Image (cartoon, rainbow, N blue to C red):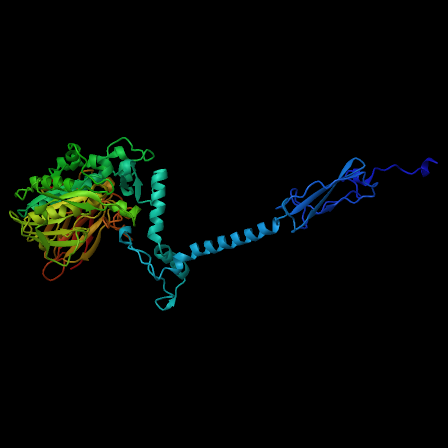
Length: 585
């Protein structure tokens, strides 16, 4: 019967293994079923006896041996795993390879942990010079602060390790070298890698790319303040000169990297110079002076002028002063090496000295205070050079480091100060014959944000116009020998070029008028890696560019000796009241 006719099925070794439960199943030796794993599969089917049996191959050095048999003209494959696989010549395969692989892994792991732990383990024994980094490193963490548990101990520990781990300088240096040579990029945000091995200080990029565009009013504040300083100094019969040191990329932009593009338009310094000329301030135009020279007078791997550049500036300042001093002989120069500031920052271990020169006569001076380096904040010197004469008070920044030997040798006695605000009180200038201010282009804003400590000049106002009530603020405080009157003007009641006056009235009715500095608020910290500049005030008393500040000297009793204060704006011919406060007796 048809229903009882046995079905004709294919031999097991010819059946498809998809959709048939009785098909041969593949099982991975590891328990999973990856496509390319060594399978442990036995194709054992109820097939007829093999017509032909052939041992196909033995693969040595792998995890499997593959053998093939022909049964009924169809192949049956038996794949079996074994750790005893041998190669054709009978030598061990997989077992030997596995042992070698394990040994290699152990060596790799050990080497990894040695490299990772070495900087930590070697910290107590390896100490590197970190002075070239020009910053204060993180101190060792403390478990307690003011007798209480230090909740930041973990983060402080991380900061300490990041600054002090062994071989740090070497590794930082290696990283910087690879980035500079392979990609012409810098490993630190403070340094810009230029062309032909030149390095620039990144703090000058804002000027170079016109990103810190100062307002016209702030520039007018600078010019007005410097005019007051010059009047104060020359009024005492002293010589005065101002020198603004151009940024390196202001003079030599051609070696800046292509990816740091300059921007068209006038820089802050270019806009300021005409304002200084309008007020007849004795300022040396160093940008024009350097552009007239045929040779490069800045270091390639430092942000400042070199020895020859410093000599050029010394002569320019000297010609602006009324007295004459040693000209120095260019033919009597000796060579020396100079390690650049930005080079040392980028390469703390391998910074290379650049060739430099200095006149022999510029070394005929000595320190007369506790200073030991031209980088110290306050330095006093005495010169034994032939032709040295007079006395000098010089306010300077890091550009003054190379200037100092020339001026120290030229003046019999000299004082150099990097402290800001400048102390220009009567006692500070008492012994000075000449006063020089040198300031870097990138910090000219300090003339507006940090006017010097000096007594406000006294004025007289011929006529007073109608009062202009508004939101002008007045703040009174004491600072050393001064009573400080400061605040912010209501700009709607003041003009661009208006002077600001502070009128004081004593309890006896004695009225005196002083002209105040015009002050701009310091928006951000301006202190750079060399300590030049100042930090922004935590609680600024001045807002915007319409501030004012007057230092009024106290009387011998230590009081301001006035009971009434008014603030006026305008000129000495005519001024209007904008604020009025009662101080009290």
